[in-house]
Image (cartoon, rainbow, N blue to C red):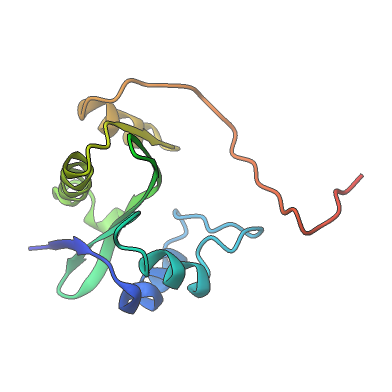
Amino acid sequence: MFVVRLLTSDDAVQLRAFAQSDPSFQLSEVSAFFSLEYLHEWLARPEGDLLVGAEVDGELVGFILCQVIRSSWSLWHNFFVARAHRRRGIGQALFDYVIGELRERDVTLCVAFARERDAVAFHVRNGASAGYSFTYVEWRTDQQPVG
């Protein structure tokens, strides 16, 4: 059995360790997106963005990090369930929880980046239309361009 809940600042260390423990979840070498400082900052704003986790026996096994960009739309930065826990309803429960929260806030548009074919199929089954293909790029403004 699993539990889905909003994560808090107390969960930052476990969330970072979970993300680092699974090689299929790729942490950026450039950004501080999953640094403890960033996670604590993110988790300290429960009235805005959403960070929802799924736990089995107190262990984090999945999460969605959803940023509410404007009053009517959101960007799902990460939606991840550990491979060993997939196809057990955890992803669907996370998805349903976040959708419920967004509906309560009248957020009507969701945009997500899906890298794996199964992830795209999951979103389409849940009403998404397959959008654009893209290449994720990132850079820092505090460093000089190379070349």
